[in-house]
Image (cartoon, one colour):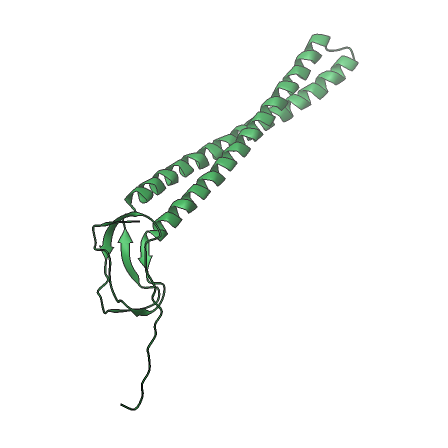
Length: 170
């Protein structure tokens, strides 16, 4: 022999990022793995079902948002008409061609529609915020599903394996 020495390597333990039943684990001792190779899969069925549920809820929220916007538009149109009617009745009242009761009724209708318009716009904002919360929940579930894949963090050779497919991992 021409040379002597020691070989040193860095040991990396590849482990799951989420707990669950190991559905698939494709690691053989002595095999060379590339960086980023998918070596296993943890059961993500519950997260996928929750994601489907959240998608359905997000769709329902979007439809409620459309309804809230349409409702606000309808009330706004009524409000504009009521304001015009109030202006007309004020002119008539000033010319003594309308009664005080007609003026009060028109003013009351404008006040009621103004409050309804504020409530409809507020409802539309609430639905928009619910949509933002649903988007965040979907992002969490997507991340949980992503983390259920076991990826090799670095290129190297498998020295030993401590689990088998079907086992529960932490």
